[in-house]
Image 1 (cartoon, rainbow, N blue to C red):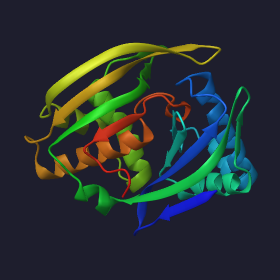
Image 2 (image 1 turned 135 degrees about the horizontal axis):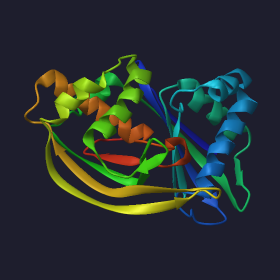
Image 3 (image 1 turned 30 degrees about the vertical axis):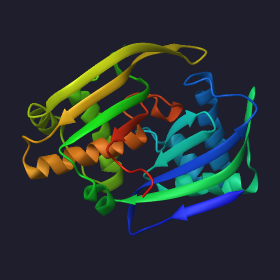
Image 4 (image 1 turned 120 degrees about the horizontal axis):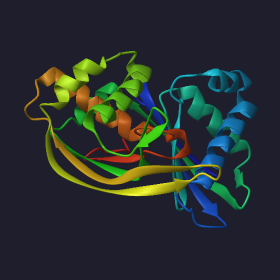
Length: 252
């Protein structure tokens, strides 16, 4: 198995890219991604029992997110030990067994992002492509709409994990009033997790931050980057809310 690492400076986000040879194609988000989440937790438990216990006891947002495509899996985390522990386990045993789906890891690509690298790519106009169904959870119901306040408040939890910087909701509410929406197209989609279904949205959203002061623009850009890596909304560790930010280079 090939292992590739890219490390520069003090990282705020970590990415593990797995290239897989599998017996079946990915069936998308659902039971398979729920099993992938369980597999990752079990792998971390075998490599680092203390970290596994911490993740089990953590009541805040999950410390990693997953994207499961055909022939590849992405795992993002602001916690290096999460990615490192999973990498150690897969280097020892490259089999990913999700019951009816089995895959062999052909190569591991470990990438690390610094705040400075992220800010080098700042732009006024960007597009969020919601690759997997995205939803929010409120008062026992799913909320499958891409409201800007909800999106950036979700990303603010990741910002706090990455930089230990908390942004109050009322500040985000003020900032988003200055954002210009240049394009929006969405469809609703249901996800079957076996014991329950989730309704979310997929689609494309193009935003322009030109009217915002520089400090607010910089913070919203970092929120967009962190949100795109860790996912927006509910059950991101199970593959929901996975998003691609354009333009942003994920291979730095």
